[in-house]
Length: 252
Image (cartoon, rainbow, N blue to C red; front, side):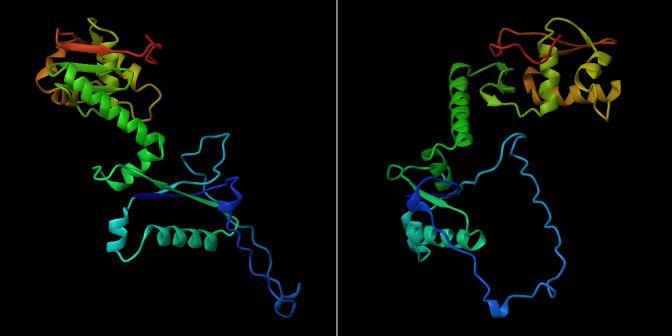
């Protein structure tokens, strides 16, 4: 078994473990004249993952450990949960907690924490599992050739990810969406680096294209050099292009 402890606001009364703040006795309470000037507390930094217009209401901590590993460490799952609850109460008495145990078939493989995230329906873990399944399915359907998936911004070469950077994929996509047309270097600069602080020159564009072609390996000739003009995408019979049902944001 594995455990996910999620300190968060919840409506379960049984999950609440209030711990009131300590009260100073009148004999030891500081007098108003002796009190130091109030200093405004520094504001907490905003979480980068929280979009504007929303607020953080808690968090989830996934803990991956089965009963055998816990026993080998001289503890058990219940003691770990209680220790984490106690620590949370000490750090923030107003926090409420809820613990859930993640179950998996005996002998199931994989990292404990990944099993926990999937069992408790963690969105990012589910998305990754879906992506891996689609990659495997693509490899089965297309054991050889190139898949340029614009909707998911990925390129598969003979079923394996090409490992393009964001800018390399944007460069390839720019050419793919203008299939058969020779794109001059200045048009690539205007289309892909408009508004950037560091705008490359035409020689730098050649470097970007060389890096892109090297990652395309033995399929690199789908990006052709038109001497003295620019670059062009040429589709081969073993090239598959996939687009989302909605228009690409790369407007042309």
